[in-house]
Length: 272
Image 1 (tube, one colour):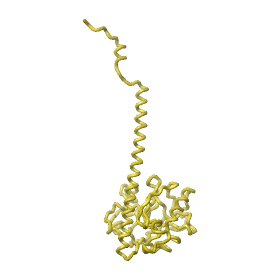
Image 2 (cartoon, rainbow, N blue to C red; image 1 turned 135 degrees about the horizontal axis):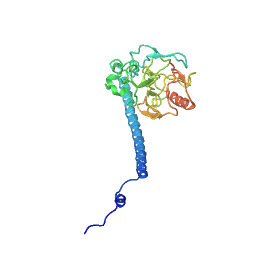
Image 3 (cartoon, rainbow, N blue to C red; image 1 turned 60 degrees about the horizontal axis):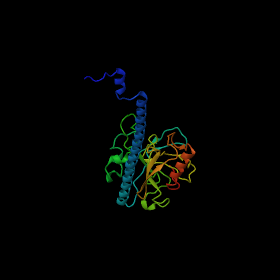
């Protein structure tokens, strides 16, 4: 006996499948989940780079302490390699010799490890060029696209800088602020970084409202800092850090708050 005949319409209705609306809903759900996943991955990447960078400035800080223990408490030399003109000037920095430094050379100009980090007076205490570079710093050497710079950090002018009006030369000299409150290394904005010295005015300076050097904001609008007692911190900024020129006034109330916060962590009377 033959089974009853099934019409074409009945066969079509019995076959499972998605309608156009159902397919669009599925695609929308997948897109939402992908966006959430990418956001989570991006945050995880930023967090991982921040931790890696904090470890780098921690290692550099340790090198300075080892240097001081070997050289009668003297801090590593921190010589500037460039000078700037008047506030809000559009003139670029003037290059000067800074061979006697924790890291000689000019960051955007020299791709050679031999002339920069390896020639510094603290390199022998770690012998690891990677700790001089922030993993979130994607900048390259001038005129050499794709060639990463050898250094992303600068050292506070409050320490070991003969070119500053006042600076601490020995670790035991550090009193105001205390070693726990005096910053040493800092992420430096990639369009502003030049020599290895981070110039900054103290709160009692007539130029206290100006950035002499500009902090970076690579880590989710934040920067990593080390302090003279050896600890490290991640600071979140109130405003983005956009380079506008050498020796430039704070760009907004939030930017001024960030600058004033950092100025509380330097030696009084420090100017370049």
